[in-house]
Image (tube, rainbow, N blue to C red; front, side, top):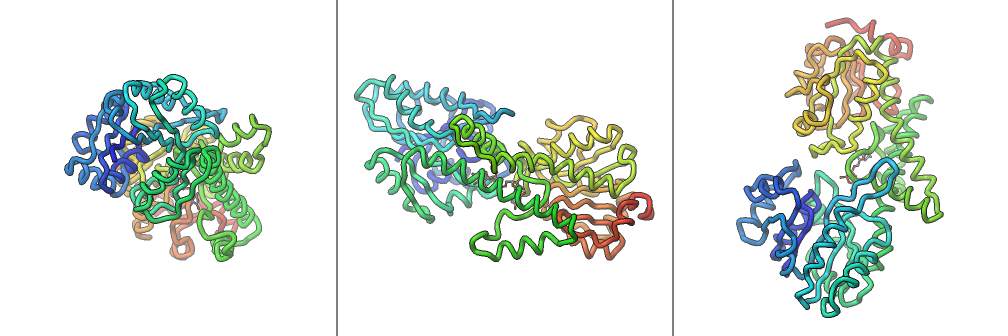
Length: 453
Ligand code: UDX
């Protein structure tokens, strides 16, 4: 089948290269000419495991190509995936500007009478596919047959390629039985259940999935805070919760909260859409509020462990919104840095991320020193905060923490380290939702009492 993908982000690239790998001919377009020039030279602009090999394999086999002008090249495609971004502002409203711009370009199809399927993969408010189809039908001549379908994308950054080939589910939202049949056949080679439904349900299924994950994480974080106050150990609580098949073990890790390009944006969009629809989503709204509080909570814990942070040097380990990606969009690190600077104007901050440093150099204020290694960030630091749970940080030796840091105080914002083992060796390691092994009194004064090494 001849396909086009519009929007060469992670979802677009993984989808395009994935279908090319299944034997289809795919043309990928993006208005960012710089990105297309890079892709044409085999450079992938994202850190995404397996994506480069997949793209290279299919471009050299001649099944995958790149361009920046959709108009002509789209003429040939029977199936077009729309994977453009739908960012949202503080009010939560999603911007569909990129999507409508592409729909506008598709009106150039007027010369053709092949039946086309347009698949909206971008996360969009309920009703968008119907509106897009109505708009195209009103502008295209009658002989142009076009179906606009919703197949939301559930792939995660950091495992986008694996999620393409092993999807948790494929949800096909369409009003046409014939299209449902064709798209079911197209996806049949992928494992994972395929379900068909109407377009509105498919669109809401995606927003609801992300909102549900957001609620689950915020629930985990609030129970973790309660564990801290009551002397319980949240990881044990989470383990027990996860053993209940009705709850499940995933998305119960407490820490600095959720970030990234989807969960925060989609949760806000759902709240906004629900308000307009007269069905307020109070739970999701509370989850978003709870998530926003976590960086401040971390700073307060740091203040309890380290006196006068304004005069100290604090190292941030990890900046990406989760391990396995270089994405810093809505990353908890950004809110944490803002909070540290707001409450402690003189603080010295160093930071290191195994993959996101190049993004951080563009996004963060120049007052923060971006370091090339964990060692460089930790040297002379009075405290460290584990912001993203990269495996590399788990491998730092106890003696290295002691040798490199001015005071070995670690705030483990992701419960990534073995706090008990570190505490036993004279390092103050404070996790999330865990009782510090050191007494509260000592903790309060740790900044002064932990000997300089
Ligand atoms: C998410 C959805 O998982 C995916 O289905 C959707 O298509 C896009 O949004 P992604 O943004 O790539 O994917 O990240 P995900 O792995 O879901 O993590 C989201 C955030 O939640 C991260 O910041 C992560 O650190 C945080 N998280 C995750 C927790 O704080 N605790 C957990 O237990 C799990």
